[in-house]
Length: 270
Image (tube, rainbow, N blue to C red; front, top):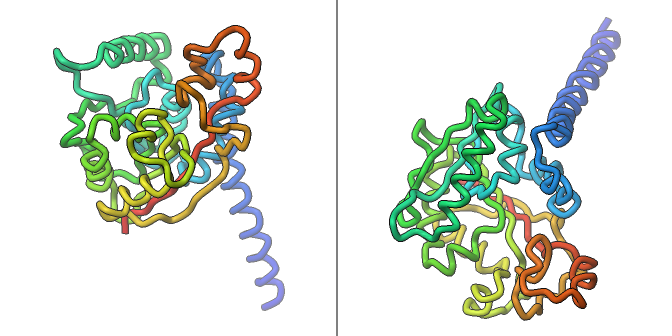
């Protein structure tokens, strides 16, 4: 009887947990294949590894997640439908004002149009506008995760890096995750050159996160690109997807490199 019970329990556990894992994977796969996704965004999946990145951050459909300055909504196209039924997705963008960079006005208008085109995808999205010097990101209380993609160099240029990380820490529950992807500079690069090139060192990012209370939990090479030499005259913007100021003669070479080499870091609020 005891052996039968043990065998039953092993079969039960072996059945339940793989199914749960596969279910989350299947949901991400279905979202990635969704008709609502921009065709140009889909082309970048091979560079941005969305499925593997979200799994590394521990993002599952029942989580509450804030995404910081999502721009045109590359990850919003994935996170909004993934979290729609069981979790919650907060799209956190800058509060517009008369002196703000026109780019952010353009981005806000574009994302509103995206929402209007696909109301069944974005109908439960929560949109928060924040001030970079004192970001208030979670109107309904702390969340499970904050994620941000390729934004640290912008905050470093604006001098708001520490206030942003403080905002992330306040936004999270105890045990919550900060998932961060950023262009990765060569170790020892000066802060001036980091800001100029758009590539930040892992040391800078980790020290900033730890200075406000985060603990580095893990690193991943999911978004690494060893082809990226990081010595481009126009910084990271010379690469895909921008190819800024690249001549026709050099375009093929830059496309062959792909997108930037990126750090992928997971921090915990203890």
